[in-house]
Image (cartoon, rainbow, N blue to C red; front, side, top):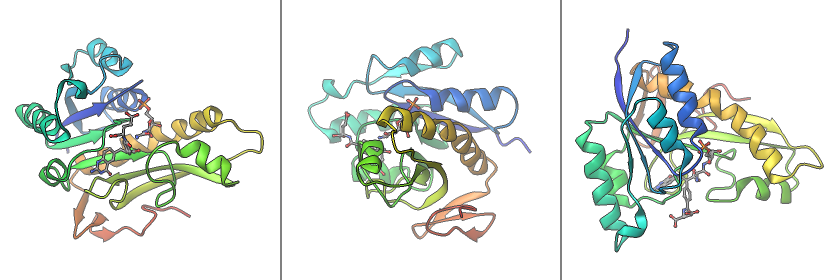
Length: 215
Ligand code: NHR
Ligand code: GAR
């Protein structure tokens, strides 16, 4: 069943996750439509990707707003103008205020480049290398007011090699992201994925701390 969920994607940079989502929709493997792409950074290449795909793209530069509250209010208005049913953070680099998050709670997802609960926040690849971790990865989670603290939906692991640089490790992680994010988004669009009581449920089954089918 094609539910054709309306999705707004928030980006700050390259937009390779955005591209993976658009590609998956194109080939008919994701039951949603991206109705708008919004970046906080005018330089974001992801805006060009949206343009090329014929999707409405907006830049809402946080530097034009006096406070986070003002910025988030404008962002919320823009998103709600598109009747978004799902908000997808795809490399979005601004922390969102509690009021904003509450407005979308249960219908906002993020992909974070670490095996949560490890390495919340920024610079995750270097932190995994510095800690001598043998494995690293990415997590898709529901966004809650606690930064990178919402319930995990799915994780994917990659090995860390001894001579890895942060950018080599980031590329390995991003290869996994391209598959796992569209997968989780599709679950949401098919009404199979919900958040209740700060827990994620897939097909009515509560997901464990590390998400779906992780080892
Ligand atoms: N907001 C809330 N309330 N909860 C989450 O879980 C969020 C969120 C906003 C963004 C993505 C997150 C990530 O996956 C995300 C999750 C930005 C920062 C950050 O420190 C941290 C985590 C994430 C995104 N941003 C700086 C800030 O002052 C700016 C950094 C920059 O511009 O380079 O907002 O990692
Ligand atoms: C991705 O690796 C994503 O996990 C990470 O940024 C990259 C964005 O790539 N997200 C964060 O660090 C969020 N703070 P993309 O712009 O090519 O999708």
